[in-house]
Image (cartoon, rainbow, N blue to C red; front, side):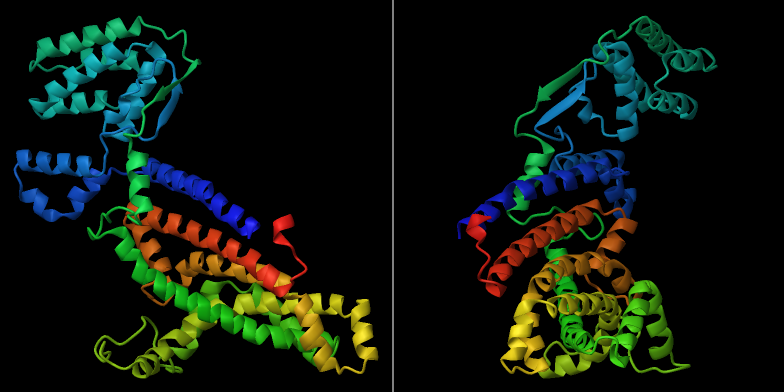
Length: 452
């Protein structure tokens, strides 16, 4: 129990690292969440500029985009510790690069402020120059660009900006390579996101506006069921067949089994899934199973009994489960065969035979028990892997599971869902590794986890 308790305690820092990695990926992902939200909600196009600005400020506040990213920040000396307030990633990179060169953030911020003020009242020509300056970090080229700009509008303001650029060009950061650390405290984006994560709140989906936790939970149950049935089927078929192959080594069953498992393990899942659809869901060939989904929405009734639901949905599960199962079946089959052959050479097997036990009992009771440990390891690794690898199969068969959801979220740049699934999958993986430790001791009581 002490070992299990220590492992449970280790889950906390492990989840923290997974959460930090998930959050870092989300903030480094391309795209602006505010602009993506505005683009997906067409009603904002009919709003006045003041109304759109109010909506944007609300989104920024709800997503804590006006706060620093983490508890602390490591940065070169001279780069501002408040640059996170610049919404555009490209623009923020531009101004930070300029600050890295000159070590004069107050002057840079003054230039940026004047450009933004000029941009608000600028016409189309001035707007082109001001937009270009916000994303161009070369000071000399910026000065030449202003000098070459033949516009009588806001001429005095442009000259002021040019003078500031000239003044900035005289600056040089002599401490550019000196690192510095800024402490932001708990009022940061990651802390707010982590606080929600503790409450199983993964944020809000950009696509649907739903809570991510409520969105992925029904999808997880579908993927869990598919993975569970596939793994159980793979084990139920591969273990007895692998024992028979080991028992009749080099026999016809062993030769056919080895050849078949080699061929199956080498076939990619998308190819097998496509073949199954071509041969068994094709009206021009054999239309034995439905080609997509988990039910017929025109026929399915939520008020049916459990038996009626199973009877209706079973045909929809056959091809996806076969696509999930065949590779795992081939791998476990070879594992059981090779481990059984090795165990059959141990002295205890000879002792069992001298006691008069039949080959069937020796393999099923003694050898099988001693090869359980690698089978447990495979099981606890295969389940999280099956959840993660369900993207291809669920996309091909249009199954609304976790894999299909993450595929759609990536295409739509719905990073809240991507990060939520990534973190949730990490938690599932950790829990299954913990389950493996418990199953090891059940399978072999000689293993003392407290001494590990």
